Length: 148
Image (cartoon, rainbow, N blue to C red; front, side, top):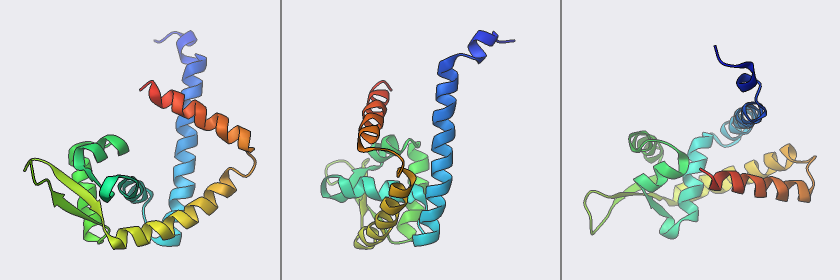
C-alpha cells in the first residue's frame, strides 16, 4: 500500500486539478464546437496546426508529436478529416517514406467558422481572469511544457 504522504502529496493534487480542468474544458468547449460548427475539437486542433505551419502542411510524424497521438492514430484521424474534405495527403518529392497532411480550402473555411465560435466561448470561459492572470497562466503553462 502506498504511503499516505505520497497519495496526499501536493504535486499529485496539482496534477489532478490540471487533468480535471482540461477534461472539463474539453467537454464544454468541444461540445460547443461540435454543436455550432459540426467539427470535433481534435479536428480543430489538427486544422489550426496545419494552418499555422509553413505552406499549410506538416509531416504526419510532426503532426502526431504536436497533438500527442501515435503515427498510426494520426493516420486514422487524417483519414477521417480527409474524407470530410478538410485535409489532403501530399507525398514528399524527395523521400517516399514521408507524407504530409495539408489543409484544403474547405479546411480553412471550417477552421475560420470554428475559430470565431471558439474565441467567443474562450472569452466567456476566461471572463473572470484579468489580462495579468492570463499572462501568468500562459507563462506557467509554457514553463511546464518546456519541462516535458
